[in-house]
Length: 535
Image (cartoon, rainbow, N blue to C red):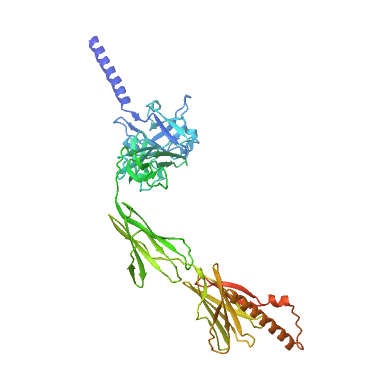
């Protein structure tokens, strides 16, 4: 009997021990061992637990692990918030439902003081030793660089996806990712990886081009605490040869000499083989050149038909323009000789031919230069008490005009307007009618010579024929004009001796035979218009 009693007592003791052991094993907390965070960012500490089926959990608190016995600094408490440690106070919050076995903690703004600290939860006020499971906080002030990858073949014309990713601890306020130095719309995805880590991924997709080769693409991450980090990735795009050019080792190559040609191109990888072709092409860029460029009337000149083609130009046709059409000339070489050039406007075009085709040049006007020639339509008239003198000259290059009134009052003002139409310059002098003004001289000059015309004013609306003077005649007219003017000045002085005293010397008379011309503007034909003042 004694032996049976002892056996029963032993069995009961084993049951009690097993019950205590099983009850203790049902309390279990799951935490990551370490968590990383950036200052200024939030930190989510994932926490879950299991409990005995006989116990219903109601609350959870968090504590700062301390090696000092009997000291349990609070990190979070819903019942005693004032007792929470200062650097955690107001920064912690419980996430999830404790009754469902969740004890996750949110730290809203991590500081450098949190670095290296270990924390742990405590469920209700049970006797289980929760401080055996802690999580250590690793806090940094510097952001890690984002990781960049490329998917797809970097070949011109193919689609390419560039990805940029970063890990973080704050899903409520995640960092931002942005691509630099490349267009394209970015897509962003966030994924929870577990143990308090989240992955933020941003991607851009584009079609690779040759211009993308060697171009850096940057990705920048910005955290809520203001930390920034950037990673650059250089694109290496393969593309076929382009910008193919041929260069020669010398210019101005003469017929019969050697020349070395080099074929160059832009390609990645570099071109490995080349093929040369003898290309044939019809004439292009056909034009006419003149030599000499500025011949005078009566001289000779030559026109040359120029162009490019392969094989070289072998035949030429010359045409002289006449009205709306043209006349084909007998010349069939590239040179057309012109002799005894005249003032007449003559224009030509040429046709260049090789075995591949033909091409014509623009119409070219032969440039011929000559001294001014005053035309017969030059005249003077008086209408409505206004004198109007018109001097018309043909010259190339354009002439400059000088007007000289032979008899006029002092301080008299004249208007001059000149207009150029092709090679014809028309200069018009207008002034109020004066009894003393009877003649004007029109002098036209260019670099090849000059022409002089004296125009007389006899009465209202009367056209006076003009005469042209040159060489010795011009000198005689000037001398005659000077004598007449001197005589008139002497006569005027005598006539007004009693009312006004004027004392002119011979030198003064010579000076006052010139005009002071002040140009005020330029008309649409490019010839100055202005006013003439007699002094």
